[in-house]
Amino acid sequence: MPDFTRREMMRTGALAAAGLALGAGLAKGVAAQDSMPTAGGGVDLFAGAFDDEGRGVLPSLRYGFDAVDRAIDAQTMEIHHDRHHQGYVNGFNSTLDALAAARESNDFASIEHLSKKLTFHGGGHVLHSLLWDTIGPDGGGAPSGALAEAIARDFGSFETFSAQFTQAAGSVEGSGWGLLVYHLGAKRLLIQQVQNQNLLSMHATVPLLGVDVWEHAYYLRYQNRRGDYVRAFMDIVEWPRVAARYDAVTTALG
Image (tube, rainbow, N blue to C red):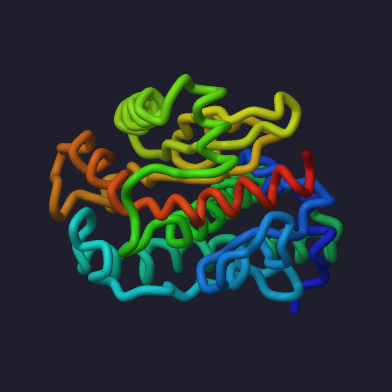
């Protein structure tokens, strides 16, 4: 068992380097296999994704692989979740082990390489955990409540938000993500492009919604038509779950 604690893992910057600085005061949120929380409610933002020692765990889906077939086919969902996401979990954990071994032996020659692996695999694990949580069979439509008000304030309207979000995700250079994030300093919503899952990171942000635009996320059905995939993706976003994340974050951190 590696000699680290959750606090030590956070200190390494695994999540912060992926643009996911959650802050010590944020202990509550919504996650893949949890019921919906109330504002300031009592569930971990990434429940099921980490064990008590801070090691990555592949979270179970709360729906079947075919549940979002109107946008993403079942075969893609199964391969994406069971193979690609599991690969990030394995990479994150093996890198934590390698870092623990380096500390134990006082041999830090590989730290530059391991630090890059930590941000890559740690970012992939967190963003995929977010993805599975915020899509589902009851997706589509538009948000309501405080999230809807924040989108109107920061983007003008839900329609203009959707246009910017789909364009940003569709135009990521190479592989990556389109993210809706809450910026802890600016206290506003922003849209972020991410290359791979660790480049172009914007720190002091909490991710609320993410669309994976690596080719493995859509190629079986859409081939090179990434824009069609992103537009279809918007129809499986479960906005109450995104809104619950927003409520939890803003209640806990302001």
